[in-house]
Amino acid sequence: MGKKEWLNNMRTITYERLDINDDEEEYEVVLDNFPESCPRCNTVQEPKFINAYKVNQSTIEAIFKCNKKVCGNLFLSKLTAVFGIYTLVNSYPKYPKQIEFNDEISQLSPLFVKIYNQANGAESLNLNHVAGMGYRKSLEFLIKDYLITHKKEDEDTIKKTFLSKCINNYLSDNIKQVAERATWLGNDETHYHRVWEDRDIEDLKKLINLSVYWISSEMETAKYIAEMDNRK
Ligand SMILES: [Zn+2]
Image 1 (spheres, rainbow, N blue to C red):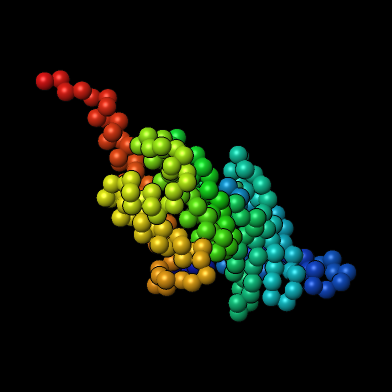
Image 2: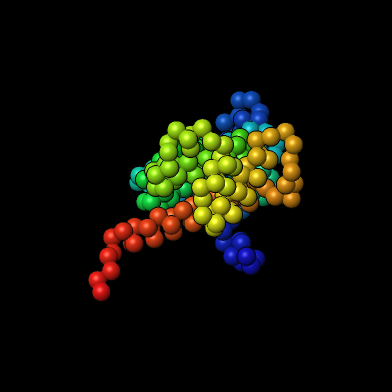
């Protein structure tokens, strides 16, 4: 951002002081930027400024209103001073964006989608350890639902079999390679001792997404083979 553009984005807002008693005055402060999205509906926008309060020497909390009709909620933004100019630190309450999956996956395993989104919600609240376990659990639902519903494997057997064994014994190579690696990282999220210290939750998510990709491809391929007979 150039200097001029930066200056153009600066906004003056008024605030009241809560860091001293019985002060009715209004003060002005320069804010380097308005929030660029609503933390509740996650849409990009310029929200409406409502009011602000200085809560201590270096912190102002400002109330904004989302300008989208379907949301329209208020949220709170924390601003802290750097060399006299206030900068946006964070906005609350934070509602994580729902992660959508394609129809094949959503119909195959609604619980995978639900658990994955709960893990994502935990991650967006910086609850990384809980998120990792959640992602690991979502993978188990995805693989087992795929084997039972799509591959028509015996339900009781699959339910009782460890996930790693299901992956090794029942899956085709592409899914097996990525799902197996996802379980290695998933186990690191669940157990006391970490084996893959150079990998993290982003790798786990990528491997789960690759598993989703290969499972979707297999399901779509099977659908076309079933629907289109040879007309020769
Ligand atoms: Zn909103």
